[in-house]
Length: 344
Image (cartoon, rainbow, N blue to C red; front, top):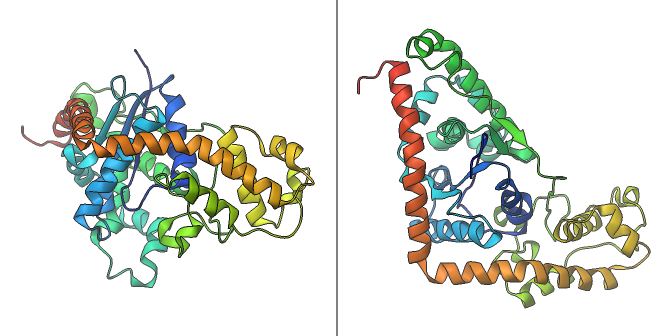
């Protein structure tokens, strides 16, 4: 397969995979393979910006790789690997640390949210990790990045870092024969309407292990059919019937969340779902949603369990992917050495 454009994306193994990861990212990775050369990474170096139990980090790394494969990412025609196997990520991140400005990092919303009032006590990695994220993308000269709302600011930073590097080193880039601009300006790629999956216990908060406060708030990709069904049937709702039009979901966060999940799992619009279920209560809708969720997530979970049960197969895929990624990364870093003035 020959592609003119390249996609890079990754998921951090800092928590168990859940429905939000699947609908918001993993499932969207698959169709991109038809249009782009795809590099999908398990960004384990990002995970350790906050403390991770080493055994959990390894397990979750395997599970994310398994999720990519189970969803339909082809490791033969595209690249799946874990970040820490390719040292050039850290090397380019250091160069970018010296290009990016402190003020840029301090403005990152996710840093402010995670650090809160304890900003002086968090790791330096948590402050600087957006430059590593830029390195992840630009190391492969990726032209496109699938992003959600949470990542838009980081992609903009990657573009800013690329632009500043190209400007600061313009004479050296030209003198070494690398053209007018060395790093591309990666573009966001949109794969359909955004799916923002919220907690089953509080429709105003994102579905996540760290924020939920209860396992019943989150559907994990490794949950079995009975657990998925129980969680959906116990999901918080209101007493009103579903509306026939999307406008009727305004100010009904939990109802909007469940309808949105149904729409995403069935590859339909919210309007189409409401055309079918409008006027009906949650006593009818929840069982239908549970059946749909089990039918979609069941095969995904079964394949993930099969792959995780044989870590040797996943390790081989990650190792082969890292070898291929390293070839691309080494080429970029050789050129960066020339541009920056490092002797090699």
